[in-house]
Image 1 (cartoon, rainbow, N blue to C red):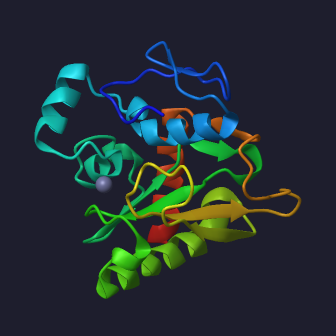
Image 2 (image 1 turned 180 degrees about the vertical axis):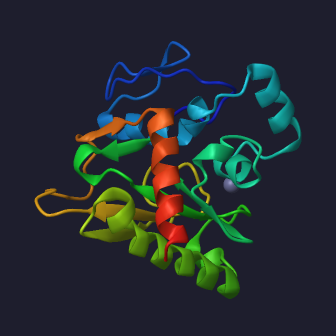
Length: 200
Ligand SMILES: [Zn+2]
């Protein structure tokens, strides 16, 4: 499996045949999806020179870069002193607005996090969950968090807040119904969530 590289360009295809910079990255749908998540860097819009200079003195972890404000600032829907919120690139059509709540510092697992950080993290999770109906027309939400699950390669603590609606047929794991959401659409989701959170 490929690890995060500089300015990867991957095909939108799932499963066997998907590529990064022309190289096959996934022998299976599962592997390819994990690669796509890992290769969040492909979502960055900075030039290769910018990217190179940034990772020259920063972690290659894309969540660290976004949390530090180095890239994709307009994707950040909400920010506290130690936590930020962004929409994920791959979402289900019936669960639009799927967001991640993450610490700004590179914490690998929930059980590695400071108690105060966990409190702050889940306070934000609760706020995002409360805002999801107004922001995305959801009836509720599902909260999900993974720690070193099989094939996980991006180890920056994050909590999923998945908007839920009646008849969404949500099931987990389900990689077959996800599709890549354009960057501009995710910026709009971040703005909708930001507005909903400001009204809480
Ligand atoms: Zn990180």
